[in-house]
Image (cartoon, rainbow, N blue to C red; front, side, top):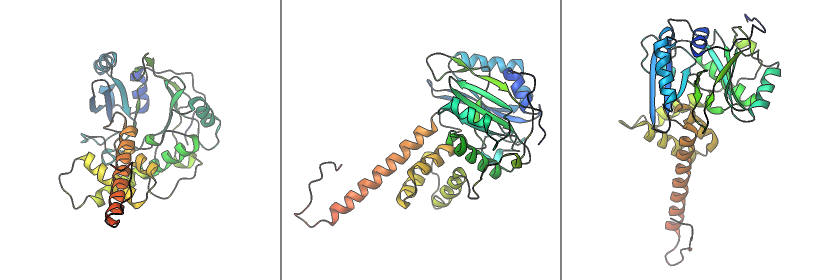
Length: 303
């Protein structure tokens, strides 16, 4: 660990935050999301350009007109045109999204001996925080295992456990509420951490998002030309039929679709709920078909 504790108080602008977390030549993903219009724009560009006055002016324009502004926290390969796991060049950050009992959860993080002092704490909305650590020397699998372990330990959002996750960019308004709330970042450390600096139990099994990628690919291998939503639907039906924990299935789908759904949790929950309903309907139909003629039970709730 290379750490400088209690640096001079630093509340960066958006440009300063980008350049403090990335090299100028790093390719990073900027996400502009307008929920009202259903508009999602992703720009993959260099950190130098993303921090430039011209690019920042465009982001401010989009933010003023209702868009939320996000940044991918791990740099992408030089030839990347998308933000998938395969596109990640290296792991530079791990993070927590504390949107439940945020103040209490943040206090637990800052008082914990299990994790080092965060590099940045972002106040994303009243009582909600995003916590960021700079890291090096981690594989994608190690990073995602650590992300899951930290979310479990501190009650973080389980959907924010993907290495391709985007976090809010400080200096821009959070547009999810009636009143704009401007995201602010506070630097707490200038350290760069390694896996050994995090004293948490990391499961040896694959993180759920990796399980989804592997299982969905295997289960749909006999199909061709299916859209992603159809793959999600097929995966949910098979997982529910196998008896998998519905909440785990929801998290796997949500994490997989975090990059292209405005509300991946809601999308995943609706997909799994529909799968459960269809499974129950099929079970009811099989039971009805098996009943002797003339002795069919009257089922008032059958559709």
